[in-house]
Length: 108
Image (cartoon, rainbow, N blue to C red; front, side, top):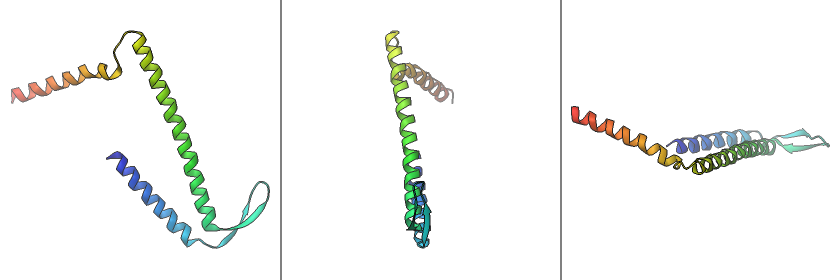
């Protein structure tokens, strides 16, 4: 459900940007570090949004892979110490929750 919300919000944001870009089609002066030129404002807006999205996605990807590598190293440390996998560690807690639920049903 959480992923669907993000997709819907992303589509709405893209729609707003597209409408904003289509409204602004006048040519504008664009100054680069090495020179200047003239381009339609729609291209300037769309290219800016795409570059912003690429930067955001690359920062997120770096964080994702860093956390994945950290998770893998911690899992290996657990295995080296002879302990079970993290999923197996959480299973007894789930069993305790089920026992608590079972007792509540028995008392009512």
